[in-house]
Length: 316
Ligand SMILES: Cc1ncc(C[n+]2csc(CCOP(=O)(O)OP(=O)(O)O)c2C)c(N)n1
Ligand code: SF4
Ligand SMILES: [Mg+2]
Image (cartoon, rainbow, N blue to C red; front, side, top):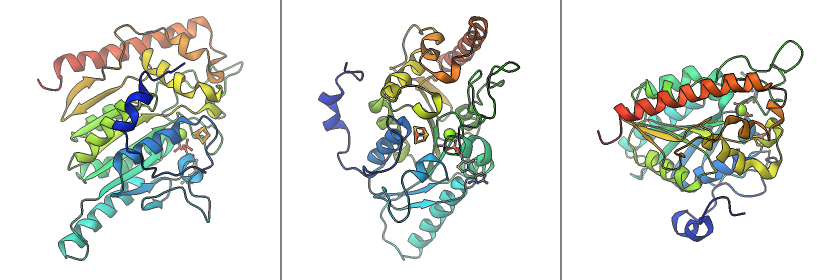
């Protein structure tokens, strides 16, 4: 089944053919996160410098003495990808001013997983966005600390079983609702915030290119299916990403200077959340009542987003 309709027809004309994250990296088979990183690199092109927090995407791409990266890329600590990216941006500006480097525009990118971004690197990210650096920060959210063995993060969804929030006799997995980091970034009054998923590659590339052309801070939140940590078949990664969008679990939208737009890929009528849960081992333990409660909360959150779009639509 061709899951992404007409992709083969349009992709060669719309997507940069050059690979800036080469094959031969060590991601698990079916990893949607590495597909997202590859699409990001294609959209940003050669004139890019990346600061990457430790995590899956660092480990799989830079095993010494090899690297999969074809652009300048620096591995930094778990907590400071945004600080390092903002320092690179300030450094390039100073060198350009002194005439020590050519006038070429270079986009600086900070990247990290949900643990690196939503938990431990959050302070650095907030500071970099608030100071208004000309950079993009991309969070690759696979909803747990995967690289170290599936520990819960503030990005883990309610009800998911992880090694530090395990489902069992006394607990039904993660007890808290997923932190809404895109909205926290909107509250920083930055020019551009967007959510993306590699199951929608054209939407992904368009938003990434938009962020690239903005002079100022942008934040992109990427929903990244992790078959290993979510206990789902690796061949399901793309369709699982689509189900997250079709059920409203992870809405695709963008916010330009505080004005909202839901992606045209969002369906008019949402599918039930159980369709999304049923293919994933991390939700296997949930009872029908627990699923109903999560469903109710998901609809409330989605309606809040729709209200924001109604009153603060892009173009209004
Ligand atoms: C200060 C610090 N604490 C803990 C670690 C160990 N550590 C390395 S990667 C990682 C998990 C990363 O999770 P996330 O950011 O979600 O990225 P993922 O591996 O899921 O892609 C942890 C806990 C570390 N390197 N530094
Ligand atoms: S653990 Fe998950 S995110 Fe990490 S490489 Fe494997 S599939 Fe990708
Ligand atoms: Mg993670």
